[in-house]
Length: 195
Image (tube, rainbow, N blue to C red; front, side):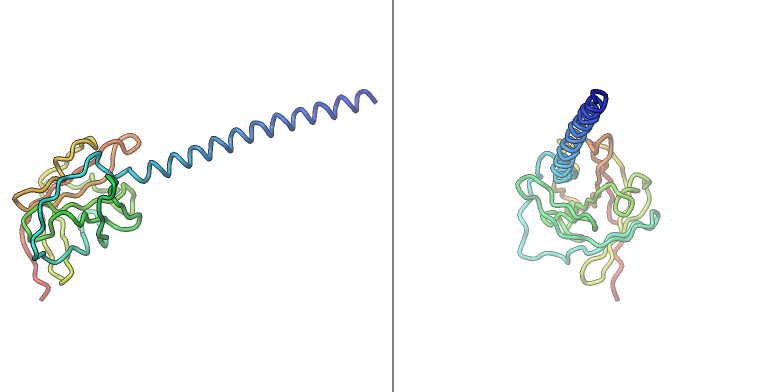
């Protein structure tokens, strides 16, 4: 009888230890998920918001699509803003910073997306001289030539600041835990009319 009681206590003790370990694992998983959700809110943000120059009453047509033919990327754009220092980011489309310039306005046009295969995951494969096309709402297509690819820290906002000349700036995250930004800048080459 002593042997049966001893086995029951051992089973009970083993089950108690397993339950404790399971609880610890579950709590750690929940904490990791909470951290990941908070991290995802800021992953594409620069650590400062660029100062936006005043917008005139007239604005060119807004961009609606971006095409990187060499990479077989053809994606719709979603108009996004910087809210409380966080850059709004789409999970399914390329985000266009609505406070930046539009094609044809002569300033810095800023577009960004997650570093995922279906979005800007292949952006780093662009080469200087490659072309990027941006379609606007009326069907007109603006073509740009890639000039540079650079990797910067999130606190380096120079690439997304307003410019006097027209430039297209595309960026995504890169580096360990997306701790850096891959920035592609391109200059206009031609306008292809919708007609």
